[in-house]
Image (cartoon, rainbow, N blue to C red; front, top):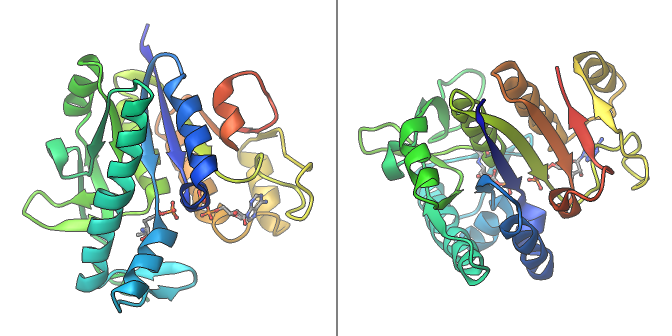
Length: 259
Ligand SMILES: Nc1ncnc2c1ncn2[C@@H]1O[C@H](COP(=O)(O)OP(=O)(O)O)[C@@H](O)[C@H]1O
Ligand SMILES: CC(=O)N[C@@H](CCC(=O)OP(=O)(O)O)C(=O)O
């Protein structure tokens, strides 16, 4: 039987909320078994970029990563956000180690080909080096991944944190029974975005298509759900979407997804 592995992704709104982040990290540090944390930080990158006079270029809510914005991404995701999270986890006796896809050659990608839009230095993932990541887990480290991949030839890429989490989850599924948790500020996928109590308990492929057709899923939830189903198709056992309390194991008020 495969050992269980939990992969937890935390998004921008949680990272921006100091108290919310501390609470989540405490719950994360208390989770039993092997675990990996993945963090975003898109909002922070936009904020710091503005301070440096490097304005974010977005199209349909997605960042265009030119060379200057990649430098901001490296500094903010791989530096500021990563190191603060790692230090907080260390204070909670969780032996966290900050990782980008270049560290330990853990996530290899290629530059997204230009179609209608040139996203710039954005990486589409080719491979997850599960052996190297397993070595860290077996040595009792808790890897903390940021939203950066690399091509193995010296080029770093900006890669969406939801995608990093999904790719890590499917890549690690060859060796582990993997559950992927997407933590954000709401209790789950909502039937009605204005009603916090309308959490959809379970979504399978059929329900997913219905929700898409009805326009229930929008904005950031669109790529997130796409990533969820990609991960499930690539052997991830279960995906859960909810707020921090989902990590406590005492609530069932979040959304679970299966194929
Ligand atoms: N049906 C839905 N249920 C919950 N959130 C939704 C839904 N449709 C759209 N959203 C939006 O998706 C956002 C989550 O996506 P995103 O901001 O990318 O997450 P993250 O914080 O993980 O980066 C929510 O803040 C919410 O505004
Ligand atoms: C290519 C791409 O989309 N990269 C994202 C990476 C950060 C991220 O995903 O942060 P959140 O999870 O907080 O949104 C970006 O630069 O915004």
